[in-house]
Image 1 (cartoon, helix red, strand yellow):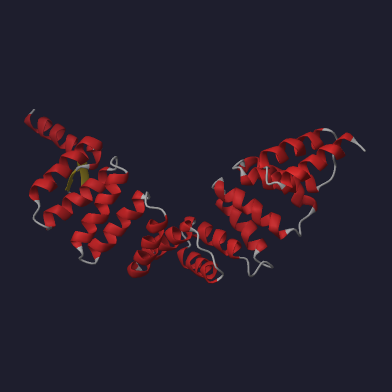
Image 2 (tube, rainbow, N blue to C red):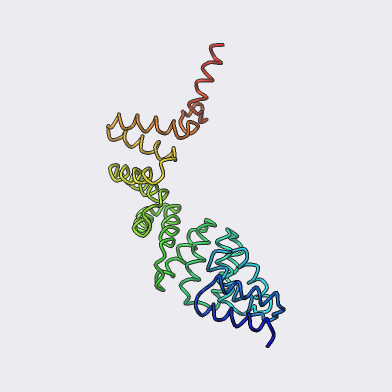
Length: 265
């Protein structure tokens, strides 16, 4: 038995045990020792994907798919790696290819839907994510991205339903709580809007736009002291986001003082 064959066997055992780091180690040893079995690249590529080595996963799966173009499952895996690297067009190309035959694969619809949402192709994203749900997908990111796509299309009730589902699965997503607040504000539910935006601030207190939005809500609900407190907090976090619109142009409050001093001179 060749040395690389021993290493390949070790890699296979590590794979069976789902010990992905060990599988990568032995696969690499096999390749370095002269292994020309193309499956070794799918093995190592998948393991790299599992442990978050996305660039290495793409590298290995590129080599594998040159010779195994018909392996749509590995094409899907490469698409997932591209998605995690924010290579959205490459990811979409892989998901499109995979879905030509993997027509009942919930993960393929899910990942393509998420990619389409990131690409701001919201109607197509919603269609794919709806299909993923029907096939049994319950990923928290699904509800986030479908909710955001609904929001971008001004489908506020559908957006609200999805974002609430998402925040129940992941209760630390400040931007989603903020958007829920904006939806409630647009619907006239100001108390709920304050509640959601307050939650966003509790999670991430370094966003001046959160304080500014809540400041206006406090003004609308006759809570002047709280509104003033949020104004000062927004100034503390980022004074460039606090100011006035003059002549159609936003002027940060710090620059307003400079303009006044110039006038006096």
